[in-house]
Image (cartoon, rainbow, N blue to C red; front, side, top):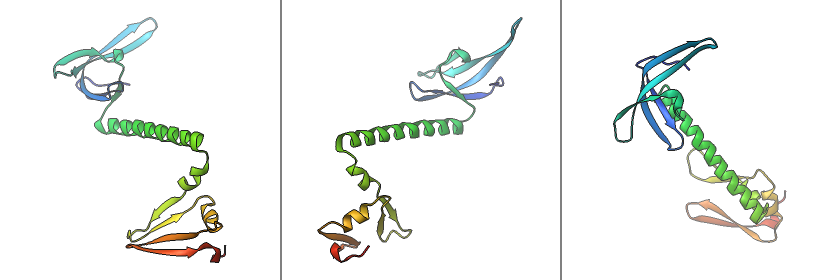
Amino acid sequence: MNYNVGQVIFLLIQKEMKVVPAQVVEETVTKTLSGEKTSYTIEAVTANNKRKLLKLDTLSASVFLSIEEVHNEMVSNITKRIETILNDAKATAVNIFGNDFLEIDNAVKIQNSNNEHEDYVSSGNVIEDIISSESDAEIDLGNGMKAKINLKNINV
């Protein structure tokens, strides 16, 4: 990537989860028999707020042109990490507790727009399993009201 002398860039140092602002202070073009190579010297702010000159190509950091780009990258990285953590937890649950919890986990809670009551929609056969059970079901109607239903009286 090409930068302009005087341009402010942002370095995302993944190892430390830190963003460091820097300014491009020098562009060096080296011409050799094998071609041209452009390198950049930056002035970055160190941890103790001192300025330090560094060669950009020697740093192990991702370079961004704006805070918004850094933000998007960090959110993407965190989202991927969260997905990995959750998938690992789900895999562990299946290994330890079996697939039974998945039917409950697959029930999707839908809340209507005025937040007066909650509905549950199953993406599996949870409803049929409940109806075919031998016991009564208790349904929360909201506002502290509950109803008991004899499941044998429901036709599917």
